[in-house]
Length: 401
Length: 178
Image (cartoon, rainbow over the protein chains, first blue to last red):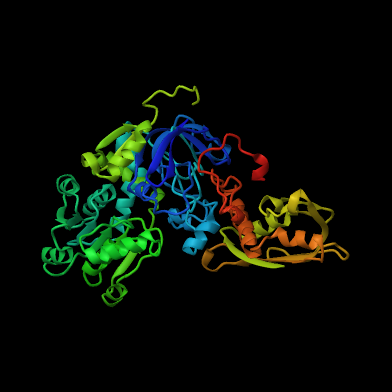
């Protein structure tokens, strides 16, 4: 089959690789009909996530048709089912899963000892996202092996298009969980850093959960325009505006009730000296992440408010404003999304027309053009917000499935 | 050589105890073992993997057996390798399942055999035993051992610096998975 493989920093290649096989009874094989490039794939592309191997198949946002089912998943899935696959792999049986904390499933990361060394405890396995999260082949491919297929995949049993449901795999639930962690109450003002795909969905979700106003912060004008026009946010461009000051003025001096970091470890910002400090430390790996957004979200949040972190961090941060957090009673909440918990309720929102996630899609490419997709997305060319890849839109000639 | 490890499994002590007592199944998750063959109610024959495709063998007997609570065994008098093991099962608080506490101890004799025994567990005996318990937990809670393209044999600390690329293998080596 054809698959998009990580070949080193800033290098991906669509290659011919062996087709996946069932390895365990609860596996299924899915023929992928739509898959997407995630902002967090750019952290891999940029070389900031450790434990990548040359040849790793990327991709953790995918959906398709079930073509083979192991005996242990046959009670829940059949050949021909149309499914969206959540990016964390979860067993459904451990204490974490039973609490709904699927992204920290205790059983699905075969490289748990590695993750344990890095994080203290391991996380769940994730498709196509380094060997720290298990070394699972990803879904930017024609086929994928899906472990615990009786637990994860969500069946789509109506005529919604791929594009309407694809983002249930990651970014829509991730944005939603970011807003849910804000514990939104009537009258709340929510600030969202990052107007990328997850930020856009965090804005839409904050409104869905009853926010009075949502303010988006970014420096890419076309993304801020999308946040205004499609998601309904007010916007701040941090290139020409002092964010802390502007947020105070926009909230009558109170500060936002909740702040969502939808940026993570590769933040860019206007303050030259601190940014230079973070860039140098990240370059020599004495700090893995550039936590500018996190610092700003904490210092601009109202007293007693919530900071919700859904942007991805990989390791360690410096100059963390612990004093501001502690003395002002800020609550910080975070996590890789527990996608399984949110897929069905969000599907219902889509079915009822309360959410239409298709507005973020700017690029549709055949899988074979994935490398162009990464470049366009990374450099924000052609006003790129979201790239959807279509496997099989160029014919496979080798006769493999 | 001593090793200890613990884990919590989301299942009743009885289920876990019964599974552990099937000694012939131990090699499924204890990767340093090749086979364990029950000889009678109390005695069993153990074959462990040693370097360069060789094996070391001994007979063991159960020395303490408190159903759903404790199981202890040790090699019989006169074995080349003197060793002992104990596993305790304790209810975890607040409906969190069952805590498993395992302790293994091997006394390596002098000479080549001693070197082989030392290599059974490598430099991190606790880590290897933790991996054994991780796989045991996976078997009890999910019925299978989690396998990925990068780690087709499942959790194995010594493979952590020696990963396959995360893409499907042409032929899955069933032998390597066992």
